[in-house]
Length: 94
Image (cartoon, rainbow, N blue to C red; front, side, top):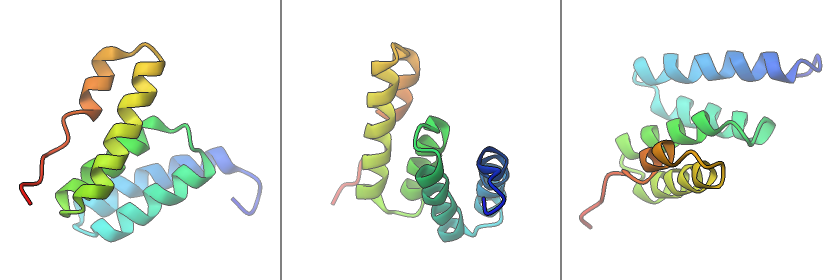
């Protein structure tokens, strides 16, 4: 990022998100998702991944926000099949 290669950095961060999640370092993965979305807010796949990781960690309000943001973007883009992926957020009983 400091070198002005934002797209390259975003790609590296995106790969690191999955590596952190697979290693069980979910807070690190969430932090990187947020960093990517600050740099490239239209990265819808990262918005969806943020929702998935947040839900897995029990951060249901954050997960719901991410899933809804993803679903709305997919709906606006006419990608209705993908929009449904963001509306299948796990429901919290509490």
